[in-house]
Amino acid sequence: MDSTSSKVLVTGGTGYIGSHTCVELMNAGHEVVIVDNLCNSRPECLDAIERLSGVRPQFYADDVRDAPALRRIFRRHRIDAVIHFAGLKAVGESTAMPLAYYQANVAGALTLLETMKEAEVGTFVFSSSATVYGEPKTAPIAEDHPLDPVSPYGRSKLMVEQVLQDLYAAEPDWRIAILRYFNPVGAHESGDIGEDPANIPNNLMPLITQAAVGRREVLMVHGNDYPTPDGTGVRDYVHVVDLARGHLRALEALRKQSALVVCNLGTGKGNSVLEVIRTFERVNGLKLPWKIGDRRPGDVTECYADPSLAHELLGWHAELGLDTMCRDAWKWQRQHPQGYTTAEVSDQAKAHVESP
Image (tube, rainbow, N blue to C red; front, top):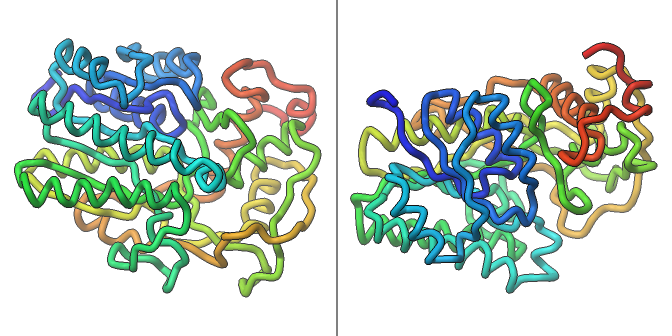
């Protein structure tokens, strides 16, 4: 590796955002070590990462709450930095299972940080979430927006942020980036890696692609009576590859000096649910089976980022638009109708799509 490359430990590296980040890291010359307990991802993802990067990352099927396992990994590898994705991430599930979420997300981060301190590794990029803002008071949302999460998931992310703030105040030699994601969608342009939810998806795009590939009979649009141009909720959808590149920019920024930075990662533009559906239909030449249903409790009217601080501090901005997000998401699903368990193209997918 050259003088600008690093050995990076990526927790949750076989997950949706983690796998895309590993590919970007490795293609930029970094060496990657993955720790993932595979509770919401599949080992087949490692094959795809290897195909896209030309190198198979070192992989450990361990849990970040397992301190002895983490210590063995840090003894075996001279880690320069950690990117922490591992954790549970479903807002609704967190309401029903709060203890599991605090245990995985908060206790997991504490164990990881304690192990990093023992190993004298002080560069940490944290996968946070726009859910820390709660019900938006203004839009676009800047980093100084009040923090008032409404779910155990959001509160668990905020708790880790507060731990990191306190850690940096006590030990300012740490180099910490807190990245608050908005709505990651899309897939690698190859279609080799993408979003493969283990259970019922919580996000719009996998619901769309599963409806397109025939895995669900109808796509439910939750509410069309919001005070928006077409009555459906508005969100900031950001391409997962843009998001992955944001982590590289964060590592580069932290290389320059000890710091704690907090940045939104979003496009700065909101798109409604119906706008996403119609864009998906247009760019992929198909019709989706969708209908209007009731609002979901807790859904907000609109939520989109002010990403200007990420541009100022990290030199990052989103480059890939909604058309590309929809095209890449469908390419992944069409090539993997049942996720990583198969790469066969379903008959319905073949009927909808001509040549890639």
